[in-house]
Image (tube, rainbow, N blue to C red; front, side, top):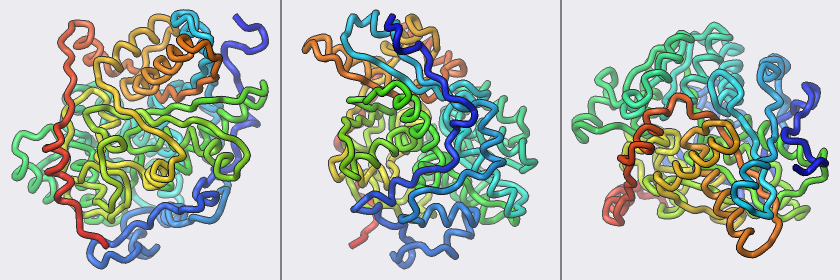
Length: 456
């Protein structure tokens, strides 16, 4: 083991970031604005504030302020589980016999089990500060719903969660954690909303999608006085809060004068990937450094690699604003893969613009290959990774093996977004050899993309 670099690099409590970084301030090509689907005009603060908390609307619309102060109440909460460690994967390096140096930023050391708590506590804080009664949201695999239920319990807010139906059934224990923290959890699509009933009528027997759950959560919020909707990914405000990950990662690397060559994150809607890479992308945008950044998505929901860069609805019910993003179409309902947090049809407008501008690359990987990587990682590094995180592990292993072939000693950093202890059904299927790979056909994607809204 390299004596110069410890197995885990820790920062002190005082080194928890005091500000979030807004990468949009350094982007020459800003993300396209959200559009009102009725008028096709950019959404105003007044329009957004009927759905989101006021301060979150301001953060959502601000393309120019480079840093936002983190309120002390949020920093105090962060101290329960932050700073999170940056880990040198010595044992994985040894197992792969690679000259590459591999690091991972571990975000699973909190009860919610993932990075989602970083934004959940911020959004709950602003809802409480505004005097709201409660919030509504969607969740895929359940990490976001768990994180938000924790944050709402902390601030005494009501929390209504619409959980993608297949995950609701696959992950009952995640559901029970949410209920333990006081949240109500409804499988989506449901009969409790008009949009849910419409989706069930059009897609009988559907296992649901994040797009479906978003529609139901938004409808519930706008029809319930004293409630607002909060989202766990995709939005500018969420990526802003998640930059605490990348800022800590960069500070830990700088402590030992480590410069990464490759930075890897799993990609569903974009919260963890955007949070991890933003400070590094900022350096690229300012011409200070150069990195390879890789987004890894499931082959079952390949928004970057097979989607279209276009305006689309963020939800299946087509009631949300239009966002310009890499999308498979809001009517695309992916297979019930176990990486439930990566089953969104589109990507963050920030990441979509960065990808479109060539500042990052993307690859899609199949489920069984992902679990092979997850199993190896668990056996040698001692942590059972979440299926979502394991997409990044797959790519990190592949890049490290490429270094083995070429003899190059590259430094690879990836985001380990959370743990997989509520995903044992998926591991059971993999271990029993009954896990399958589902890849949508061109026809399936084409049918969905043909229904994109007409925006000039």
